[in-house]
Amino acid sequence: MIVTSARFMPDGKAFVFSAAQPDGEEDLFLQNPGDPEPRALQVKDAEVLAVSPTGEMALRWRRNGHNVLALLSAPGLAPRVLEESEPMSACWDAEGKDLIVCFIAFEGRKAQAIVYRGRPLYLVPWGDGLEGVSLCRDGSGFGFVEERGSQTYLKIVDLDGRIRSQKILPIGWEDTNGLVYADDRFVILDRKNNCLVGLREPSLTTENLVTFPGTGGLLDGHRDGSFLVTETANDEANGWDARLWWQHPGDGEARPVGPENSGWLPVLARGGATLGFTQGFYTGQVSWMINEGTQASTRIGAGSLIALTERGDWGLVGDDRPGGFCLSLVPTGPGRSRELPGLWVRAKAWFFEDGRRALVRALPAAAEDRKDRCYLLDTASGQLEALPFPAQGPVSRDRMAFRPPEDPVNQAWSLVNLDTGREVPLPDALKHLDPVGWSASGRQVVAVLGSHYFPGSGAYHLPVQLNRVDLDSGRLRSSQTVKGSGTPRAMATVFKVSEDGRAFTFQEFLRHMQPTMLYRLSLVK
Image (cartoon, rainbow, N blue to C red; front, top):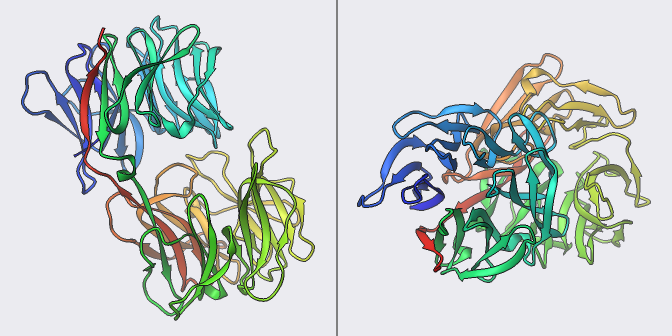
């Protein structure tokens, strides 16, 4: 089994935990001291976030295709939904009556929100990270680990939302795991050095407490100095594999392109008869393309492929530089590359049908507010013209694009004219769907229907449906089910669809997890 969460019960001896089988089935268990085996609580697809002083359990519960905040009052009862928004972490207040919860999004805010008694106390913008919410000893505040820009912090916030103190951690975000309050201090797991690190208020000076056996995670701590930790043989055993899928214009089903991890970030050209993709995840990225009916791929150049023209003669490629990455127009045949001005943190782009212009949505490296900007790219001059309104592709032949929703949970996309900025509502049939393509006439939109992995991320749990909706009548015209590999908990993202609907591509992520051991670890006094 793979342990996915664990929390001590109030006595510090019993604990509740969730565990998944290799087939993806997840169950909730209670382990009492002296019992030879844990007791199944008959709650499926739930992870325990926090346990109150009276034994009530706050859960992240997968219900009707999405995660909600739920309460399990006692073993043997059914969970009760508290909030439809998806929680990331939680802790109980000192009285054990109310929860302090970090939500992925709350009441339409485009940020992670830490909420107490219905009031957001602290917002963490998308693009930054947050891990753990743990109550301070006196109950007057809580701590959490935050990634903000290039720094990783431990922050302590009072229950009125005021930042009490903060500390830049000596380890990076990718090397931290878990945050708990135990033995009168905050404790994190330093994955790089395999040790538990303590930070005691008010100075928050770091202190190595104990070496951690193997690689795993810190799940909970108790006031007596005990911890619940998981351990795996190596960190690389748990992670994600990527695979590209491509349905050719002349084929009736999508098929995998190459072995796992052979490519990602797919784009289409020539009516879906050409597939472009990137090899390499973080360093040494190379862009390639392959044509229908061939086995050999053609190298475009160094960097990650962001977009291709419909004719397939030019690509927009991002290549690493100190402080960010640059964007370049790169020919797929004869010609010379042209580097665009600026450095960027992230970028997406969609060429117009004639290839002379492109819509670019990107985060400049110098942007302190960490918000994406939108531009029109003139491919002849290489100049970027800033747009005064948000927009996202793909772009129709009559220069219509999509305006992303402000609320990532209750998604409501609209159309936007790239010449005038005028908005047009989309039919109700497209609410909660991500638009990914246009028909040649521009009067039908192709959108993805499925269960979101993360609201607003464009990532879905497979299987999903590609729905074609008529803009004039608002009616569903056709639907196609996309299954991928059929692996449990597989996700799909980066959908690209040809105008005639005969070709599409997407990127599938496959979760591979090794069995884990759950330990109770106690500090030697």
